[in-house]
Image 1 (cartoon, rainbow, N blue to C red):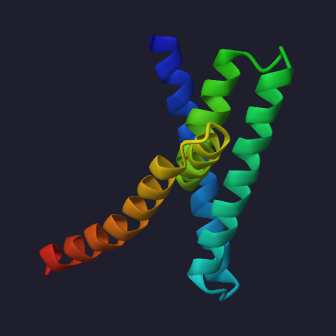
Image 2: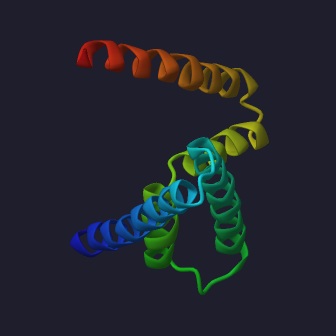
Image 3: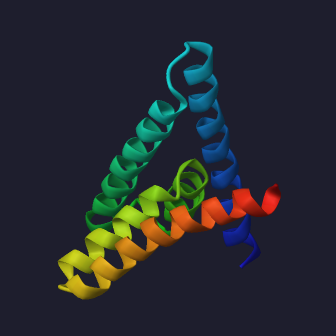
Length: 122
């Protein structure tokens, strides 16, 4: 269990550094900050999808490497990748109502929670 936690923590640290660098370069080159977020979210989704596909057919992508890359790196880089993968899995399993409720709740309640958090901070 400790080994798994350390793998996730190290992967998350690396992912967080990459996320910071994406924002840093967006600011440095005077790009809108949302552009770096969009790029991070889309590339994180591509990466977690690719890794999941590899994990399904490649034996070299063992559980430790999956924890480091998928849970750790992708989780530290962007949680949107996990959200997207979960939605795809619900779609593939035919859980359309759960998919719709999960997505709408995540977006609508997420926006509301961020707004409430801003109000609380005032």
